[in-house]
Image (cartoon, helix red, strand yellow):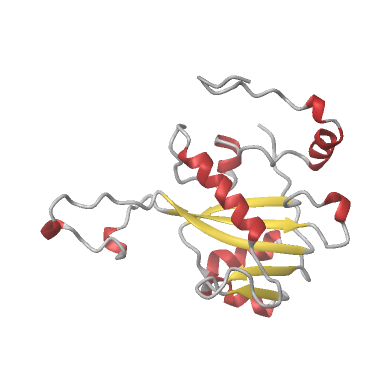
Length: 197
């Protein structure tokens, strides 16, 4: 099994989380339904996938193809204890972190230069702060999760890359550059049933 590069992320890093396995089917009769937002009625397998994504610097125009490097972690929820411990281990001191308005990221203000965006008011802050790269990774994760595949189970960090992988765009940078230089060498994907190429 391949090992992932767990050296600390540096430069500009975006952090975000998404929840999986959280849906609980509501009862048929309205009188039997419960408030599924309360902790006692949540699915016990509900987990947060925390994404830390290093992005390219603005002066690296030739290399800017999506995120530079991504680390994912399975945590019970977005909380200050887990976020603080993971940031201390996997983000280099002095890195600039972009995060949303979640209070889980509040304690990082004392350790790193922070940029925040409040998604309840805007998707891009007035100073240009976004989480587009982290959100893009989460979007790809959601598409992977919706495909027919074995269900995701709670487990050790890094399990997602080892169990299901992610769709295109998450190959090594040098391999992506080669494909852009030589598009005739791109792998041929089989056509969907009923489509003519």
